[in-house]
Length: 121
Length: 107
Image 1: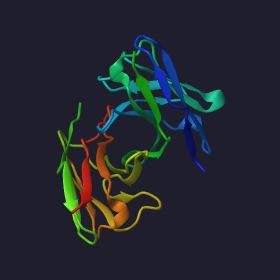
Image 2: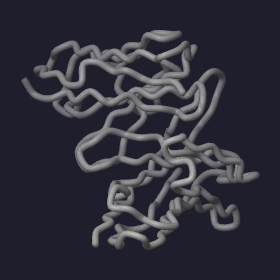
Image 3: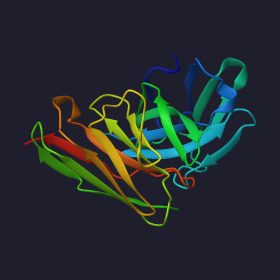
């Protein structure tokens, strides 16, 4: 069974740094792109970026480029989303999801349970 | 970047109704279009990929169609467990933007 298990809820102060994780199992981690999606309170889904763990190739949405860093550790089948200086507006639920690809399709087929981040002074 | 416009933003329907949601891409995306369902407090789930292919385990009352810029998600006979929010997503070019969502609630 393919599973993506995310780290627990976080409460942080503005200006602090944070790295949340997405531990995967049940498939060859290195050969699937894995992405992150933000959902602000009461709002829709926002695609943030993806990484290919095999070679750490990554792509970011312009909205998130320079604001977050996506990394992956092949040795422990885990992807990460990192902030260097949090803002209150980063408060949201963050989901990781595996990208599967085929002939003329590419979709986020397995999702983590989400990590809730609250940034408040 | 490709923008996705979904409509309506919400709709009210009854069990047994046929429900149709549309999604338009700002430029041609072939059939690189996915649909997701999200229930309150839960992670999204993939329903349809490649515009019309049903993801494993998804009931056959869900169907998708379209290519190029215009796409449709149809629920042939709405069931109680289908009340949720639905999102389209293009996967033609990164960033793989989502539509703003369509909330389907009880009439």
